[in-house]
Image (tube, rainbow, N blue to C red; front, side, top):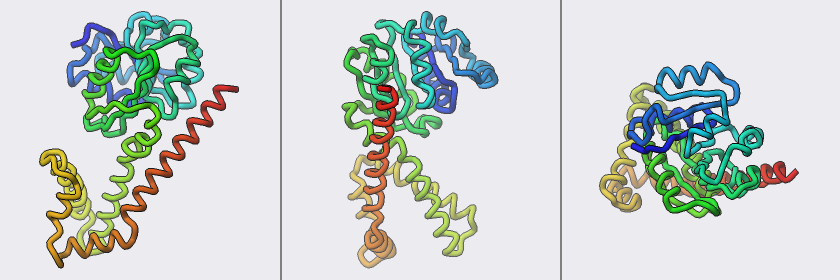
Length: 278
């Protein structure tokens, strides 16, 4: 367990999922975690009751107590938050942001100090400790800071380090990725129903099929292409299905979806940079 203390600015679903994972992995003890938010007192009471962590409305006190802080607010609220806390943040703090579309340099500029900032992009699967999280280090980050971030996010899934220039691609691939998989499950379920299955059976089979296929990739270590070919008996049902998917542009549509999401991520970041510049 870390002797450092961890502070959360933001108490929404992402913060709660991270707190749950961190406590489950014994990364920090409950008494070493502090949580605050903008104005939702009921949310803080819920978190304090369910996780036995400390909550406060005093930003200065939280920053005085905590060595590591995680910013988990909505993108529209980060300017106001940093304005309120910049006088209390020091170069001794490690600042980790999970705010989409906000770069480490933007945070450094808004705070106006040579602070150590790590940008992280987990996804919603952190709620079940299966997040795919990418982290990118700001210019003043030390190797031990990256180790700390790895330790925190490993408690809710897998972690990779990337150059910050790739974070738009990360956002498009793994950040938005769960939605693509959910859409596939929806389509498989609908197809099963149209083929004559009751909805509940079609849904359960679709969920388990996606889960089992992903687990096969993880546990066998084989490439997805090889595993796919093993399912495809010549002249069989799977070949007929895969040929249909290829003709209808299944792979191309996913590639284009990720490209469009990455493009939109870049647009949103530029909009935010322009706003901050004004």
